[in-house]
Image (tube, rainbow, N blue to C red; front, side):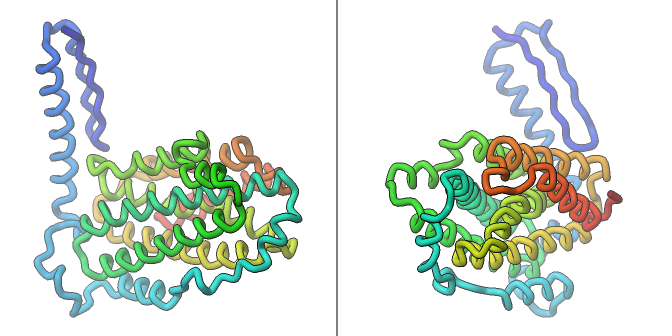
Length: 319
C-alpha cells in the first residue's frame, strides 16, 4: 500500500489531489495516475480541435490552391537557401586548429558537441511531432524541407568534429554529449521535455523557437568571434550558413504562432523564454565560459537577453 499525491497542470486548470488517507493498492494508484494523464491529454486535444493549423483537414493531401500565402512564401525562402556540406572547404581548418590555445580548442569542441546533439533533437521533434500534427500542407512543405536542412546541419557538425578530433575515444565522447557532458544534457533535456504532446502545441512551438533562437544564439556568436580573428574559415563559413537557416526556422515558428487562435498568456510565454535564457547564460558563462576564447561573459549574457527580447516581440509580447 502507498499514498497518492498527484499534481497536474493543463495550462488553464490545476488539479491538486491528495488521497493519502485512502487505503489503495499499487494497481489502483497506477489506474488513477493513468486516468489523470489521459484526462489532461483529452483536455489539450479538445482545446486544440478548432485550431486552424491543427484541426482535421481533408484537403491536406493536395497543395493547391495555396491558402496560407505567408507560410508558402516562407517555404520558398527556405528552398532558395539550400546548401550542402560539400560546399564547405575544411582544408585550412586543420592548420588553424593547431594554432588555437587548449582553452579555445576545448570551447569549440564542446560547442560542436552541443550543436551535433541539438540538431538531432530538433529533427526528431519535426519528424515525430510537428510535421504530423500541423494539418496545413504549406506548413508541411516547410517542415519537410527543414528536416532535410537539419540533416545537413547534423552532417556538418559531425564532419567538423571528425576533422578536428583525432582521438577516437574523445570523438566518441563528443558524439554522445547528451550522456557524457552534463551541461549539454541539461539543454537537451529541456528541449526533449517540450516534445510531450500533453503540452499544448502553442507552448511547444514557443519552446522550440527558443531552442533554435536562444539556445543556439550564444554559440553562433562565439564562432563568429573566431571569424573576426581570421581563423577556421570552414567552421566560420558553415556557422554563417547554419545560423541563417536557424534564424529562418525561428521566424517560421513565430509566423505559425500568429495563426494560433488560443495563444498562451504573455506570462506563460515569458516564463518559457526566461527559462531558456537562464539555461543559455549558465551554459556560456559558467559551464562552458566564453571567456575561454577571449569573449566577455557579461556582454554575452546581455546579447542572449537581447536575442530573447527580440523573440518575445516577434511572439506578440512586449519586452
